[in-house]
Length: 161
Image (cartoon, rainbow, N blue to C red):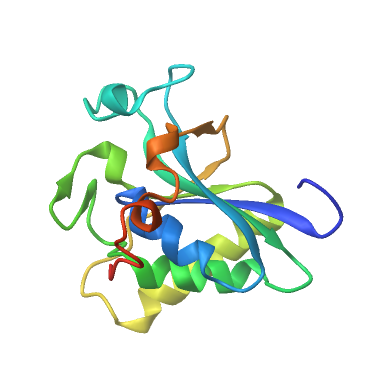
């Protein structure tokens, strides 16, 4: 947490460009930052994580006002944005850096994410089981500046993922 009202949530759902744009557009989100999490090297670069050898995932770290937006709503959007049943793959993007992962920042987030995974599994939306990983949040490394607000900077608006 960053203050009384502002909390962090971190999600990996494939390529971070479209994920960042969708979270950024949600009322109650103060900021959404593309970055890397879950690997074993400090200050990873995009080129390094693309090798699939650092263990990092492309993620979006969301700063949100908990008085305006609850974590469960963020989880609903996360599961709507990608296929949580494909291991290390989203669409044409293949590799562990594109894995489905929720990095939780508190016990409450861990419990909410576990309930959300169970709910998605029981919904019947996907014929396979959810493979989304649920892990405590390790250090977050912001992606290079050219990745931040990538779709917006390049006139692509919101990507339909």
